[in-house]
Structures are given as C-alpha cells and as structure tokens.
Image (cartoon, rainbow, N blue to C red; front, top):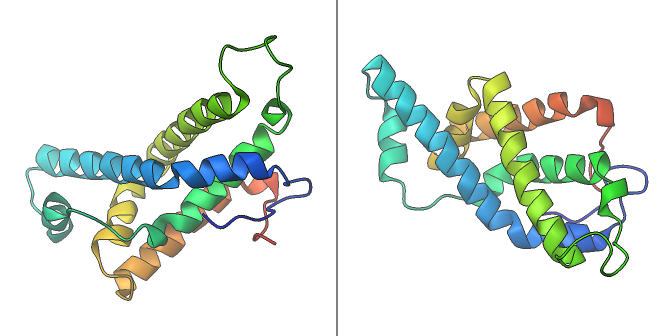
Length: 165
C-alpha cells in the first residue's frame, strides 16, 4: 500500500498503517473470490478458458497489479468513515481496542466493496484474474489493472479522491 493523502484531511496514519498491515490478506481474499466467481461461471456455461486454466493452477500472484485498486478502496474507507475512525474514549464504546475495531471495520468494508464491485461490474472477477495470472508486462495484465482502477474510481467519484501526495 502506498501511504499518502487522497483527500483533504486524509492524515490518519494509524488507520493507513492498519490498512497496510492487512493489505496482503485482503488482496488474497479478493483474488480467491474473483477466481471462485470466474470458475463458477465457467462451470455454469460448460466451458474451459485459458484464463480459467491459469487461475486453477496459480499458486501465487504479483500483488502490485492490484495495489491501485486496494489503495483507492482504502482511501474511500477513510473518507466515508472519517468520523468513525476517531479513537474511542477508553471503556465507553467497545470491548475492542481502537486498532482492533478499525481492523475489523476495514476487513468488513473491503469485502463488501469488492462484493459490490463484482455485482455492479460483471467483468470485475475476470479483470482481477487477468491482472494477476498474466505477467506484469503482459498487455492483458496492464489493461486489466487500469480497468480495475477505473471501476473503483468511478464507484468512488463522488468522494473526489486524488492521487496520493
């Protein structure tokens, strides 16, 4: 995750660090979900594709191709929930520590956003796989990563996020 400010007041470094620490697991969950959706679609249609074969045999992937997607979703979480991301008064609101509460909220938010993206954009799972199973220099990978970033940007357009500074 690239730490930085995506909107005015995006300065909660604690939340950004929590998101950075969770990044690998979130991207693995995203990849598994995309793979499962794509392979289910193949089974439904009764077809086998090159992409499906690559997804079935993949044992790892280059997370950097999904970094922009992750970072934009992370920024949208910080923007949409800015008021809820303030530390609690000890003992008043939660049995969880501040960091634990933010971690739980972030994991839930990321999963829900990825689910919403997959529902709103039917090609989302295919693009996630294309961005990860093909080598990073492959034009299919590059195109897919750009399209994914545009999808998230489109979904979050009203937040007016900018490149990190």
